Length: 193
Ligand code: AMP
Image (cartoon, rainbow, N blue to C red; front, top):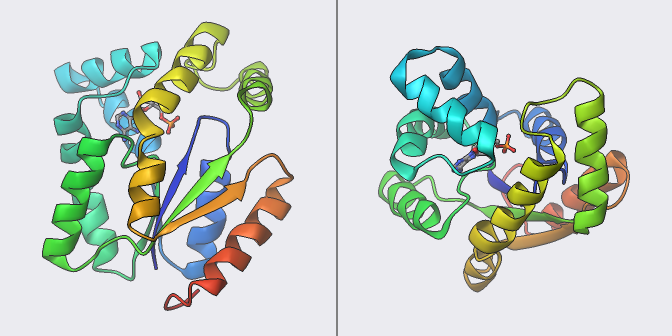
């Protein structure tokens, strides 16, 4: 199983990614988590990543590739992956697709989780009030939602044209979202789905 979870901050990619990875027995690769882990190791690269993340800006593609590609290639060789938050730009998608084709580990589906910005803002502020992440402040949340619409939004038509987009309403309970994803994936007749 090789899946991508695409969705604005707060749509539940992390929660759904963990559940799908457990369900299909593959690795959940969360781009933000791997980048945060790299940031915590310190050093110049770690500091640069931390600065981009604190502002809610995208980390430059080359850094993202260096951190994520080894994990993706390793997971692909061990049954597959649930990618969460990568790719997030068209250049990342085309570079990822080229690598996937070369290694014969291309994406089988892109699950697009969607919900109104107002709902997402409330969820992210709630996460912040429960001792969440440093990028869960009102200003940074607004910036991340705008950046998603501008930069990641174009991946929706990109994967639709390739016939692998599965759109799921994320403005429901986590269990209902999981059920919708699984029902829609089962219709695609993917191996293991
Ligand atoms: P997330 O945990 O997915 O909300 O990501 C948190 C932050 O990590 C983002 O605001 C970006 O700074 C960075 N990030 C995560 N994934 C990517 C990516 N694919 N490309 C660039 N930056 C990313």
